[in-house]
Length: 356
Ligand code: KG4
Ligand code: ZN
Image: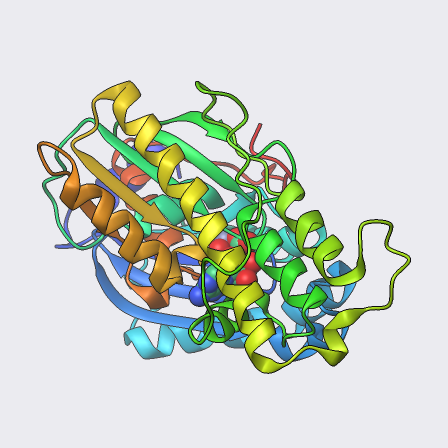
């Protein structure tokens, strides 16, 4: 069936129901979303337990777990939605960026279903999908809008013009913010995944106890760098020459909490200041926030404060917490706009490690 015929085919029905698939890192996820907004189902199989003992995601283990889970997860999403394949208008899949041996599992499943069910296939950029999760709550977005996406693999600022037109303003030149949270948690011997552990430990700490560096990369840059702060925490715990003993084992709970709180405050500070800088650059009226690190309450509160104290105040739109980390709702939601625009992929679709 040609793309135009497929669009015409669904027009006899009320809503456009899209099955979304997500396997870019360590969550196997599927969801059915109607018209980009109404969540009919969302299933996420997390692999946290499998990667825990390695302190990070092991690509081969992730890939194998996706292979095991992908069809049960899709079947459950279809069942929860009370949806039959005939009610599905398109299959959407995140095909970039991410771990290619993880992405390929979702892409292969999506291509297979597209072929067998004779449904159009839609390719989704995982980062643009994270942006979409901040967009699901309301319709009227006041523009210009700056979007901050902070995840385990990426830290990006966008000039958000529409769901299909996010323009990249800046990104990290080394570690992503989430990666820094994960690495610092490993240094502090806190449980995996690092972000939530640091947030929990930081709740009892003093954010001003240690002045960790805040890398701004010059007065005009909209890029980020988080490798310096990670090294600063490492040196703080092991000594400048890394020859000293690892002091973490002998630290009190309070000392660990102070390091976690001071690290978190420095990262949040940089994220907020860069977002403010980007907002000034494009005259933003709205700030959007998404990605795994957007689940962090301190970041949410600091951005809210920045928006409230601006003159005139800016509106902050944040993804609901359960849709900050990887999920397929954001994939199926964004796919609705691609469906409406007739932007379909074909069976030659491949996974790609980067967005470019
Ligand atoms: O978006 P996501 O689920 O996966 C990627 O696309 O990378 O983000 C995962 C990242 C991890 O680095 C995790 O530690 C971080 O998000 N994260 C957090 C919090 N919850 C998850 N970072 C800080 N505070 C949190 N509460
Ligand atoms: Zn993600």
